Amino acid sequence: MLTRIKGGRVIDPGHLDTVADILIKDHKIVEIIAAGQKEAIEPVSRIIDASGKIVCPGFIDMHVHLREPGHEHKETIESGSRAAVWGGFTAICAMPNTDPVNDNCEITEFILSQAKRANFAKVFPAGSISIGLEGKQICEFAQLKACGVVAVSDDGNPVMDDHLMQTALAAAQSHDLPVISHCEDLNLVAGGVMNAGAVAREMKLAGISNASESVMVERDIALSELTTAPVHIAHVSTAESVQALREAKSRGVRVTAETAPHYFMLTDEAVRQCGTHAKMNPPLRSAEDREAVRRGLADGTIDAIATDHAPHSSREKAVDFGKAANGVIGLETAVSLGLKLVQEGVISLTQLIEKMSTNPARILGLESGLRPDRSADLTILDPDLAFRVDIEQFQSLSKNCPFDGWQLQGKAILTMVDGRVVFEEENPTK
Ligand code: DOR
Ligand code: ZN
Image: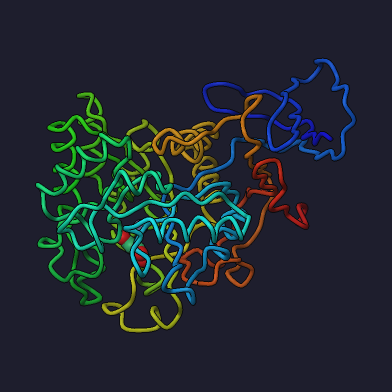
């Protein structure tokens, strides 16, 4: 039996942008029928009316922290992957800073089996670069890859040892594994807890300089050039990082980059209102940095929008700013904040879709795209649906969100994974 998604604007960046019907059978797209073309012959079991909506390749969040194993009170693989499909993501890449760390096949296989049980988004685990995230000894990349990791990263921690990073880049390249780099020079951070600047001074909080990020971005660019291995820079937050990436890309360096919605929507001013719910690593920066991140998204310097979804319980947030855990959740607001960027004229709708599906897929080596014979992983957006962000409605187990109460327009209303509807907005006209 067929499912037919009828009359939506079907956008597959670089390939397709037309009003069409999509026919789905046995987990796969079988045909895309442009308006006015022939009718399907087989009987259709379900028709999904997508008129006035946008149908795009399933969104892929390449940077998510699920807290299982180890911190299931913050998030489980089930709650996190449910939050993902509620937010329009069909696939997520799970960072390895769980407890124990995902530095071995036992943990990788556990994550994959829990994801399969949950049966929401596809979960692609990232393994760690170094054993126990300690930055001392490189993991067995060949084994990790064989067990199912799609990338390696010490995210949460930088790889401070330059030589270890060089060795890791070369080893990862030989196993065709992307390296996702958390760029932070701990010596320069030196105990800082928020962006260095006027807000930090007024709040009497120790500052974190832009250089603490950009010197590591420059280092990774240099190591990528030295080894010819690709490197992906996580959560870009500063103007200097964007400029370094722009120059490296123009020289042909194999570097890619992501940023997160909080870096293109907020500045360190948000710390005044949101307190610890605006504390993350790297920190929210100045208005100039936010503008530079936006320009980097617009001109292609920043390839991807990821959430860095980092759930923490209120216990870890309801403490002094300096002591609070770093991180904000993002899965259930990212698409709408991305659409806000489109509404503000910073990037086009096609660019947004590219940065949330096609590009993360390319960087991680995953399948994506609305073409016959590909998996029916897709997201339907209602660009007009206005709503108020309400953390009480979230599927995530954690509530650390600086966007609570924001009025937004446009959201994912249906998420399909392997031809199965895993999320559908109950009241799409609200
Ligand atoms: O804010 C952050 N939270 N930044 C990181 O690098 C790690 C993450 C976490 O795991 O909570
Ligand atoms: Zn992270």
